Length: 149
Length: 125
Image (cartoon, rainbow over all chains, first blue to last red; front, side, top):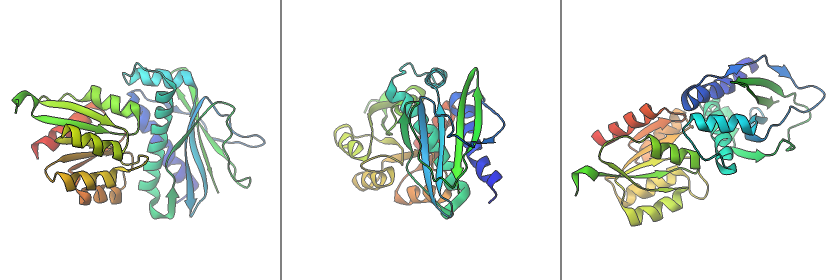
């Protein structure tokens, strides 16, 4: 599978989440390579780790304000830390689901995990180059980061 | 049994927002939500006390995952109807859940209508 198709799998998962769960489409910006410095991390990050034929990490990172409005769109009134974590965890869950469906047994995919805090660091191999896919929704900006070798 | 409360629904998911979404979205008449659980162990305890007839079951959960919980619930009550709701949308996962005794499979993310259609279908079967 080409890199473009691999990234497409993850982009589709995120867009489908906005379309179906949030009921309002998000827009994908122009992907770019994060060279020189790690990709920006926002308040909440949901991630999966991949091993097997390819190794690395894929994550969706978003600011608290964006996630809060997403929850409101989903009729959720409780904007607690627990629910904000749950939300990025659910997005990561869909990344995992799409990857299992499209990549099959060539990839071993971890259970999704969540980190909170914009000063968090996401570990990845120094010989990989993270590809950042901007995700724009309403006035908010999040990132999908695909970092596979 | 009261005809207006013919079906007893237990919601099993480790995500609070998913449990609440299913609670809010469920619009099938004659379905009473009897409780929610955050993992397979909690679901087994709740099953013993509330005797649900319908279950929505997440797969990826801590402590006891959904596949094992499906197997145990069906072992206790072969007539229980379980709708697996998971982001793991590959065929192998769906087949494994059905082989363990689940009655239906709904992919996350889902709309309210998709949930209600899936629950209605589960009740009809």
